Image (cartoon, rainbow, N blue to C red; front, top):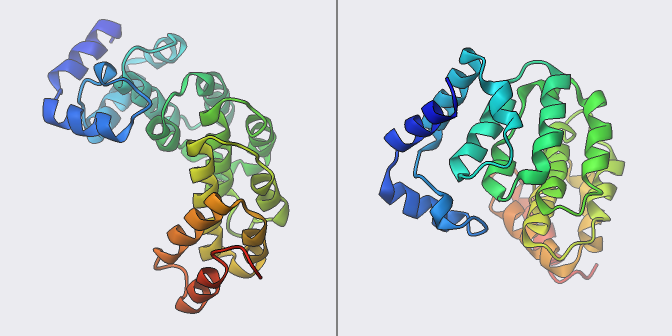
Length: 228
């Protein structure tokens, strides 16, 4: 396996109609950088790259030209079972992430079992000025610190983020909507402290969720304007 083999595999799996559709969903990446390969094919190729041993070379060859190469990079890292290997690879890759899809689909399974070791990285990433590094930090708090290990201090971290970036604030809204489903009584006071745009988005997302009770949806709709 080498870079030419990978590109040949990507081009052989290209679907032009899918390329046009997918590029419309990821407006921060120029359409010329899309090949048009579907996610299941990319996941299989990512595992093949790891099996070949070429993954280390591939993830160090930055920046990538194509959207699908960034997706492969995210899927490769997500397969790593060693925490230190995975988190260092994520840390190196994040500054090169240029879209929500690559950010959100990078999900190392090993993180879930190492939340204590992950937290210092999240605290570093959330202070970044790079949009998708901050987004990934909030996403990680949502994925790995929302159940039995939830703590009000994590919600406060997300609450205190000040950003005018759409993809940061949309993730913040997603975080609070998810928290409303899992930790409603503890997270409800935070909705009054959110900026108007993020609060409205979070309430809309929460009210669309089957995991939020009808009673709690009524409570959320009653504060859509921010008043107690």
